[in-house]
Image (cartoon, rainbow, N blue to C red; front, side, top):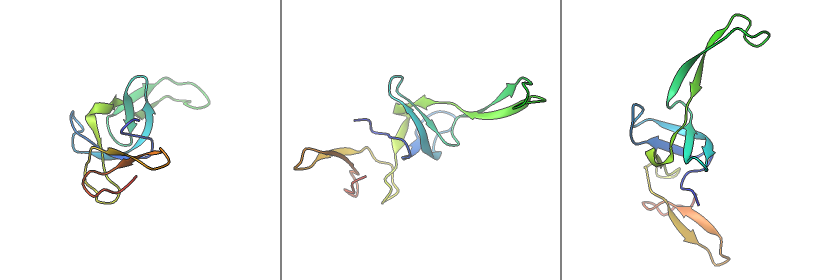
Amino acid sequence: MSHVKKDDEVIVLTGKCADKRGKVLEVDKKKNRVIVDGVNVVKRHMKARPPRFPQGAIVEKALSIHISNVMLVCPKCGKPTRPAVAIDSDKTRHRVCRKCHEQF
């Protein structure tokens, strides 16, 4: 079970975007990378290709960062946490905040 999933709120721990918060847009489990909204944004120059870019353009694009450089933020208490795994009586696994013990 991955500690980060799509639509989770995370905080970036290292790099040029450290301490920024954002929502996870995409998770690549094979490469262990995530794309976070508003984090690690670069500008790409697009060649003119009608009809989408008739004159060319400069497009902002979010690049991926390694999954170990982000930490999950608890939706209830709002603090960064390393989630614990709780197993119910019917053998289902859930992520649980270690600080407020809320399931998410």
